Length: 192
Image 1 (tube, rainbow, N blue to C red):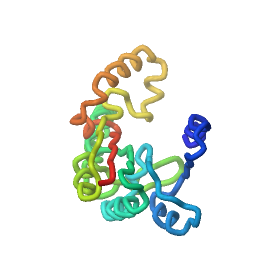
Image 2: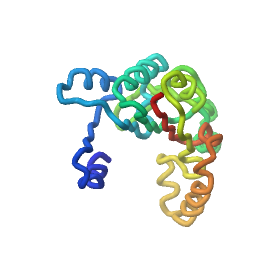
Image 3: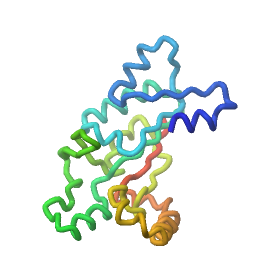
């Protein structure tokens, strides 16, 4: 993603990109002698779901110190109430796992060959955690109609159905109230 962004921004010499560990971003900025504050921070597809609520509080405090005045952060987060996942678990007979995301505790989730502690947060929780330092500028659902990637094998020969679901997804992309029921949601916050 960073390489694509660099290519698109190649005519703008003042832009720089960094890939940083979410648990070490503030430490990096404090110790990088050439570092300047960031105008924009982006966390993709559930990276912040690897942080507990306490770690998330620290993250939001730390990055507010690394952002310029009116700087923005855009985060893609997995909510607690994914309708697709619950339908999949119901119809595949995995009833004990139904609504597994809807917990305040973490789940041990297999990612590749690793087990990752994963917490789930609804948009309202992120707004509550950030309301003293940030203003919400956008909340959108991602994957309300589009199925999660683990259903790819089922849908790979049903391109026509994916096209219909994609068309439906594009019709509701600004319906913030659906964000808590999607596979992911995107939220953009601006530093106060």
